[in-house]
Length: 509
Image (cartoon, rainbow, N blue to C red; front, top):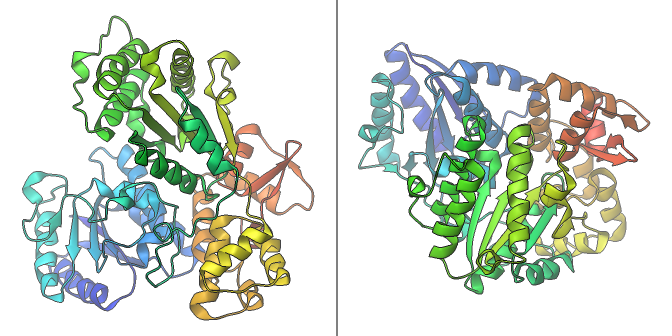
């Protein structure tokens, strides 16, 4: 008997869908569980995780408020983790898009997770009964939504209906003003000169390699998007691979990984895959991969190719692949110095922390090329950003905000959006900032939930958050906490990155 997990927000159409859907579920005596991703209760998340792991289907009801929700993204990520270990790849995810127009900004990772999945588009109340019947038919026959026979000609889309620009990387979970203001596609991007200029100058050089490093949600993806936007105007071809979205079995061995990597790059460049024409087991995976790029990719495109490798930290937990893959990238970079063919390959490596896998310095791409270590926003930049939200903040107000979230671009934008949206003061916002009802609730709960999934990481975070002094951590736990943005390092000792995290986690972990 199928078990169904319904994850939704609150809206008239969602409530109507849930009412009709639950009636059908109960009539068929299926087991189900309904969760609201705006309940604002962190203690509720472990129960949500347990139910999700037991479910056969995740019915994901998405409206404009949910597509930038960190808890929604974390739920989809966790579902994919469960799929990787389930013999039938469950829970199967059925996304339902409700009143989502083409101009909305999505969470970068959520969009990437769902883009290649079949999903339903619900725009009219008249379609709700048809939609319920369609999904019930699928569940009743215990079919995966990826099976072609399940596709409805009426309401099922093959990919998300998002405009062409939004197919490029976007700042994760970016709040945006509810008005039509064309400021670099609503990104409200604050330049951190001369970083942008340096990246642009470097990427035009033959065989360039740029390394963009910063903890999560510091603006790496925003900078990357601008680099891509600029080079496409030069006629360059671009390919973006996000390693956070790669299924675990891809990392089973080097041959599988490099085949996937090669095929993904070809797909991004709209080239046929044709792996078997170039892959030779006698020469091994690394030589085959290099041959594939030389004979198929680089010879098929006569303009520079910018290959962006995003979230490469996710490879670090697979040491054998890490060493071989990064030594391959380093070799390509060195080849570009002497071979014209490789001069057209430009690499951008985006990561949150240093590799905790020991790599020979002569085989590592992390000590060559142009390093970009993103700084936090300063007071002047925050004042400029506030003006995009039609806010005039004085230096005292900015200092109060920075005292709790530093110059983190994402956290600053969340605060400014909340002030704009609800016409509240900085003081009123800060009263609830480190709680489950403030503007950072979704962000804090996602962190808390993520820590609960790793007891060792949670214990390390607890040690740091409950201490008034810098703490020495194990290397791997320390780097992971730094990668997700929860800690800073002072001479190899960790402290809470922001007072927001110290206040929220000190009595919770």
